Length: 347
Image 1 (tube, rainbow, N blue to C red):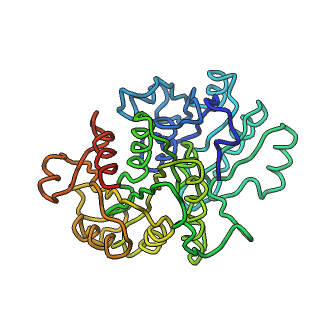
Image 2 (image 1 turned 120 degrees about the vertical axis):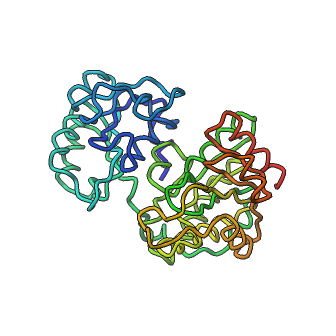
């Protein structure tokens, strides 16, 4: 999916993040507020955080002072020019909460397109399609997987791409791969490089990746092929392509997706992402973290690329000495540029 071709940025937008803004469950809403190159967020709907600003909730002084409001009516009043409603939470169980229906429909009636990260596809439900037609708005289900002729197994055509390809790989899930990918892409842009990036989750697509597919919705045999298609498409127009990773090669639940990304992207360099304070896997406390050395060895056994650098949540100096790798923290002022420098040297 390519939302860049559907919107004229910066598109005025409202985010629905009820009960989740600033929390892990609201990571899509959090990411769009912090990083979106597509949407100019004017208000966030979350009654639990109402009265605060997004900068306060997210503890980030470098983002816009966006108000958090208690209701959709308050959001639409604050942003009367809104052209998009971004649903930034996918509730557990996958269902569309009944209490959200009125809010989403109210935004549609004011002329907002709906960009949804829900597991429920609004564009496949006749009542929602009819309302969208009536209101003259569009429905974008970013989790919707490709089908039919858009599915194929990887065949190695990525080897013919002229661009350099850089993939992020993690030691666990929810460890900063998307953030690292985006920060590397932005650092490359600031350095004057012709860079693009590929998203593999819904947040990256909403932030504004040049191409993306939510790979956890793709049948296993076709995941590498879908990634390969996205990399090839972005590589046609850019000299440097950053690819968002998923999972970890040693993660017993998600390693299949991680390996498909490694083989589909077939990178020229890899950036490993790690949280040195984490000892158990997120949501899988019976699975231990295997660590940087093990993940690095596996990456370099399973593809032709080397790990060029380590993106850490910890102290870069300590981790650099520990693993003998160029290391940076992307939340530090010079972190993204330092990582990019290591990647460019490796390439």
